[in-house]
Image (cartoon, rainbow, N blue to C red; front, top):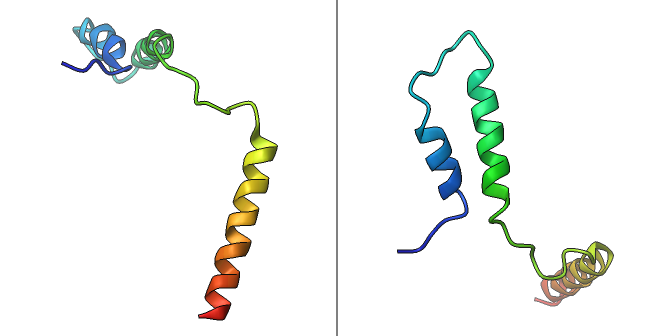
Length: 71
């Protein structure tokens, strides 16, 4: 069985027995559950290099446009 990072959220929200529409309690349950789920998230490799990513994407777009012009 593969565990998902949202399993703590499901467990946390599963404890709620009564959702009331006229209060913000449901929002608070969701927020606290997402905070618990975030502890299981992993960072994406290269997350600290957005400038390099943008430059690489621009180069890729330029080369694709050149290939379209040739074809």
